Figure 1: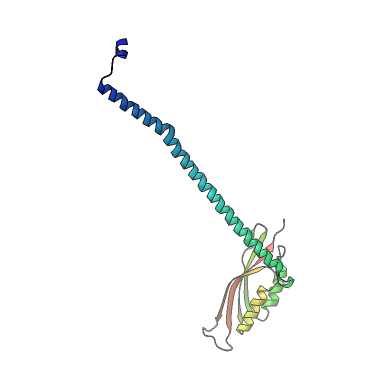
Figure 2 (figure 1 turned 180 degrees about the vertical axis):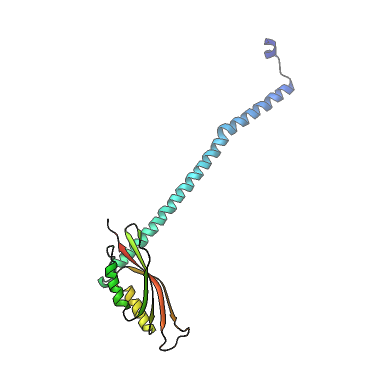
Length: 186
């Protein structure tokens, strides 16, 4: 046994041991250096993507905030008569009185969608159609409708001649929808 350990290695055995040591060193390099670096680089890439996503979200929030701030600045700079109020929910009775006054003298059809409450804002959408004697009358009704003093948004509007051609004295069919906004308090 001691003879086996003390003997000189042949050239072939030395070469085989050298190859084995090189393979062992390469394996240790990959195990201890290369793979940990690759894994950490991938983790850093994922963390970078997450941080960039969070930065994009923060930039989007900042843009929305700046837009809202500029809108609020515009509203605060408006004369008092131009600022519309957002009435307290349920404003239906007051709104109906305004609509009765606005649509008097026209052949109208009104329908209300279900009130949609989103957070503390109620959206009351009304679809309307009426017949007007002239474009001037149609414009006056639409101007009165959007100028009620209540927060609203005209969603769609269509003005078409009742016979297909625009001629003097021809009736106009006006239709559209408008959404009135109301403040919901708990």
